[in-house]
Amino acid sequence: MFRSVALLVAVTMVVACSDDPPEPTPTQTQIPEELESVDLPEIAGDEAGIGTPMEERVATIGLLNKRNNLSEELELKPGEQRRVGDVIVRLRACERTAPWEFERDEGAFVQVLVRERGTEDSFRKVFSGWLFKNKPALNVVEHPIYDVWVKSCAMDFPGEE
Image 1 (tube, rainbow, N blue to C red):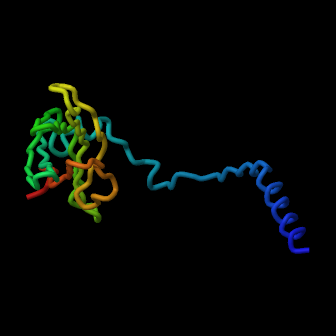
Image 2 (cartoon, rainbow, N blue to C red):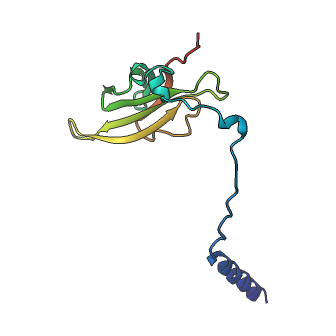
Image 3 (cartoon, helix red, strand yellow):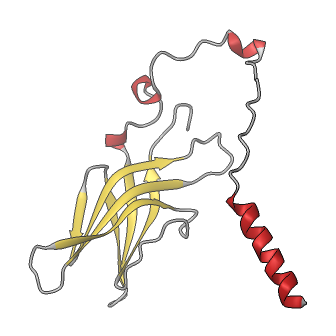
């Protein structure tokens, strides 16, 4: 008896899952009157000079060699790279939240390349992505020897002291 009930429940669940979900009905919305008359800026933020231009920003990246417990601080501008032993760290971008935002954070788009064992100049990319100072677990460089993290991103916003 129990087996037949369980089989009936399983068959019912499979049949229910095979149906296509219903199409959602669109909701009509309107722009509030006070926002209809707002003029949008004609130039983008980078062109308007809001904040430090990307090429003038400086990121401080921490690099740890877990074999010998040596750590280094690398100061890089976007587009620069630094080789330390068997690892190359490239910085592509550096950002931080505006001072008026509630959740402050700093981050950098980093690429990490490690020399292939037994070669002189053959490197393999082991990481390419954003790293964040206040949320290091969000994106992690997974390598048995090297650890890389963001320490800071130096840039200014208008109105900051």
